[in-house]
Length: 450
Image (cartoon, rainbow, N blue to C red; front, side):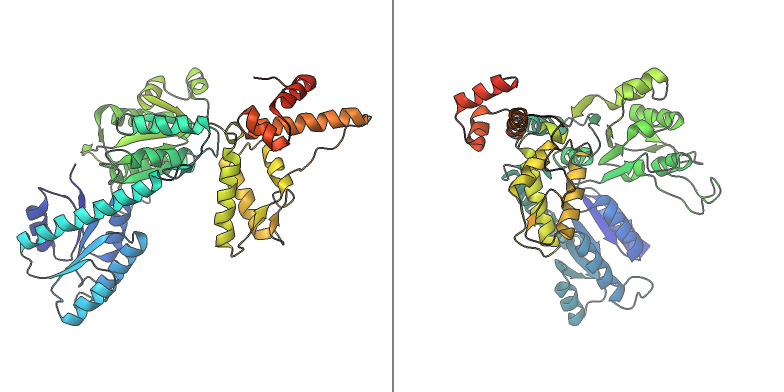
């Protein structure tokens, strides 16, 4: 698949000439003014942009072109923006380069010279992207934005590596807050479509009567309020990846249209008659029981099997052992920096409280609690109270001292084993006892060695 080049010029004839001369090597996307240029940049995320400085509503000034350049670089600073303009005075050149342009060509442009320059731009941009990916891969605890050293997460990472390049539809399963969209983005970044759009839509957040239009787009006048043509999420994801979150909330009539798209690779906008070919990989996610939905008739079986060529299950946070400490530590560092509170740490009893909590909201709940605690805490230490967690459980009425001591020992051992993924030696070291002593305590307190 050819790399995408965005051409921004208000002269339609020049855009047509450029497309004719460059389309053998690049997928050409065009825009005539700043607003549409930024919209298309966000959708297609091109490595290189060819930009005219004289844009409407002020084509005789460089102001609109410089503003477009600044906005592009604010979104993605690594973009190579080549200025192609008739505004060739030296001060204009200097201002554009000073604002972050990669190079400057004066119209009329020699197409051979432009092709050489574009090849160099794409080569440098690709090297920079590969370098950033290499830096990410060297982080042993991180994987494409996902954190985890536990066996369950290492299995997830390995599965993502295997399926990323397969181009098959994938169903990502997991409880709310386990990071399904992060996993979808990781699959996209490791696929052959990584330089193309990644479009995400939460199907439960769109009203049922608007979901079809949001996915498939609509033509002007197709329904009340359709004042202009709208390009839907599927069409926007052409060449890239479409992520359908909360797929279990899609109504049956939209499931039928999505199934047709999965089978034929074509769509029709609402109110349109044109059949549009779209090449997009579909990733879907849900925390709902789709098999129950199929049994009840609310989810089509044929649609499910088209979506779930491969299933990826994300484990809940409570089953990820030491990942809890790892994630909590990184989140605290991040939020402490954001709130200008350097040196924040967790109290020892806070870590114990973290492992006692069930984390029904998983990583999202952990993130929200730590962000709030970082803002609200007064000292240099985050306590269980700052996180709104119970540090200790109240003693049962009528307990003897021996029973209370055994209950505390049992709880401490279970928390340590859970924290260290049932590694006996590590848990024994943390608890300050020998491995044989820990086994004796487990047997006495009725804790399974498994």
